[in-house]
Length: 452
Ligand SMILES: Cc1ncc(COP(=O)(O)O)c(C=O)c1O
Image (cartoon, rainbow, N blue to C red; front, top):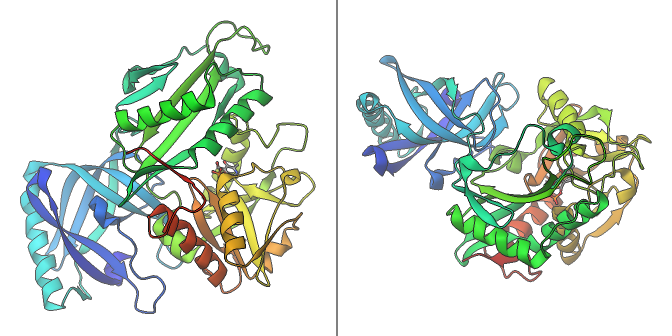
């Protein structure tokens, strides 16, 4: 944990609290686990805790600040930016990037005292060094407005509604029969502006999902794209996540949905990395789920609809409860399908393989980005039915998704994939992907839709 590692410092001003805090991040001497990506730009801190939390969640926390003089406790309110499992051998729990929003004024002097100690030690060691001061036990003492969303307004049927007023009746059809199609889209900021990644493709998929379930959307795709931008602007977002959705509302409660109105809504909020920056660099540990994806002609996998995510929840819950970051489900024939919210790729002899639509997958838009980039980089991509063991014997494996972006898979069922970290092909594809998103290279595939 933090107090065993090499600790680096950055000073960061938190103007709202009139205090400068040291941002602490961990480095490991032997290379790969360096720079635990603290989201320094967001004023984040790397903390460890035992409870599972989600990015975006707002927490009231107690921090035990420990140094050679003893331990003191401060209370603060902040937001989780990213979450990842503690690396093996470093105890049970999670690392979280945490940004402060409120600190009890009575505790500011305590923080400033710790700041002085940290900075003194940091300067003595020229910014890096073994130190004893660190945050240890972070204890959650309250989860604030359980969803923890920071948003201002939600677009509902053509109007922007204040965040807290975007409500529906408990007898709405969707609550009982899961009649909801949705999509998930990301907002990225780079020096050229604020952009939405592949907005048109996501909205097209939303319309396709709704079509499969006979939910007519009373807007054009262009109108929904414009409404997405309006929602992003109304919430002052520069990075984050957008959730456009369409559901059957309140009228009557029977399996036949046709008399229930179709409601169209768009929400957007701030959101960090889904599986954590540590996972992005060094890969995540996943298991094969004991749950399969739905068989063909049961719940259509090509539709991104709420019902499918009950199955995803079983996969995710089982993975987390058994100490893995994610679960990969097989299809009903026993072939690799997908993660609870990600597509899967394996790399073998410099060729990429990924399950085809017939393996009960959601045809992911990030998956399509990888097709484009891999071909550009000279790798062949094959959509192929894949047996479970091909994951164990792959040179590399990775997951793709709007939330997960491109995340290497380090281990499957505790078996190291290749060298057990991020391999060179994954690294090259990840780099090409993020180069486009961060504006380092031209957006040759026209993925980025400008907001401002
Ligand atoms: C079940 C499932 N598979 C795959 C994906 C990846 O799709 P995309 O890259 O379009 O986000 C997602 C995420 O939306 C998903 O939920």
